[in-house]
Length: 127
Image (cartoon, rainbow, N blue to C red; front, side, top):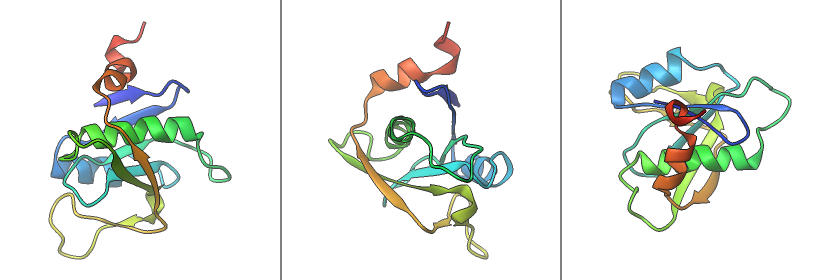
């Protein structure tokens, strides 16, 4: 699934454990931002970000975090902690199953899952 933040950045969301692996390790760059709802099953989310010298705007990270929360088992929670880091800091343990990764240098943002935001960010509904 593809979305576009209000700041114009592309966001990609995995659809399952194998799709998460493919998105994270084959369809993203090392400086992209990887997001996932903390301690629950859910989609890997990639916020496309080409710059190594700066973090993306907080608003874009928050919008991508809302998508990570909505595509997780925590979608009905009031507030969801979403971890994020550069994709280059996400690794797959040896012999780990599909979708299982170990992120390092993680930062956390707390968001409220909002289905209306998902509708606004959906790429196929943009003019």
